[in-house]
Image 1 (spheres, rainbow, N blue to C red):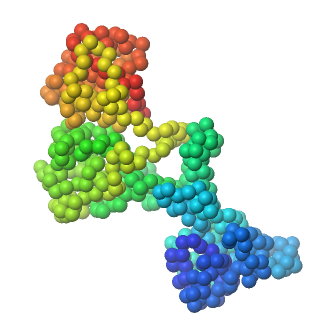
Image 2 (image 1 turned 135 degrees about the vertical axis):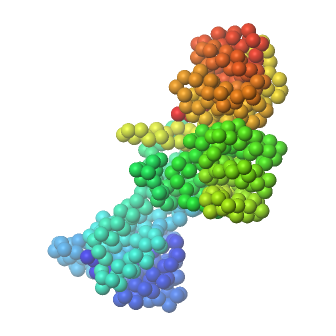
Length: 529
């Protein structure tokens, strides 16, 4: 147990700090503090000792040096049960500091602001704060360390219940939180500075020498992919304004692990389109997607792509959900798990949240702007493997008509080319081997995740049904043999898009030429494993 006689408080986030300091003083704890924190506490009428009065050394260098002093770190690091330590502390007039409250300069918030300068960011790199946290956390047998306002009530409760003493279990827990905080803080600084080097062209290295993945737990989830797996959601220090971890949940039950995975896939897909767009995602793959003049038309066409699979799906829109869209969704016993969109019109929100079997259940999330310019993509993507992880750039390629090279004698019509470009953008978000059949700007059938490309073609044709006649087809990677295109053309496909690059390209092109079916190459593969 640690008896708290003296506390040092130095915080940038002053939420609840006056009440916390007042309660400490009421318990008989002497409070030391620094700079703005000291002024805030003092102005509230709470007795507090300014740190320079305690150390006998003034703050200097614009406040950069104030706690880097032996009386501070000696008071935090000194082992209370070590005679040599006690003798040294007594010789140099160093008193025990039993409780440290620090939450660091707001570096992460600073760099999240648009247009922040390097000088502004660097000035928000805390030095004394992390040093004190590490000192206190290292000596957690004798020092309590608090890094977040949400821990104030627990610490006060323990002090009241235990006659101003903190139990070892709480001291250990707080120490772990302190080291996690400094790790996230340093990771955010390293990541931002490296990004600046990349932006300035000061380094040719695309990926840093060391990569630290750090986040703050946003919530514990009910379970993972399956009930026997535990799971939690973590948020990056700078998650981006249009990410799921920054989304506002307006309604519905708690989101599950699988909800988040599917919503992320849906949001990424919707972010690739500028015109009104809706997509229906099930098990991390789009089973329906469409772009139309209105959102109501888009969702009707997207749902029609595979209405059986759409049951229990998640949806994403790149426009605010309006009343016609909401009414379509709640008609004919349709059921979805969650919807993510830039927003919900007031009447649409009221409708979705009051219709029986929808109101209490459906999760509604808003993420602000959704589209190619929203920045919804992460700069990089990570995939864990045994013993480590892989990192790559996000696939932000969006091939348009200009990137389509006609390789057959027959040329696609303008309408066919539009359909091929649309299907290709959707195929980019389908698990490979990916095949997407579309007509105009709506998906008719999807073949996903098959080990053979011909199997994906057959699956997409089966999903499209009779509508396959006159439709177009996009493939995320090259056709290794003519059998895929031949099967598609036999079913009624009238134009095909693929990246090309196979040793059998000529044979594939010849097969299309024999049928007079146009084929275009994009030169860009979109595997999604």
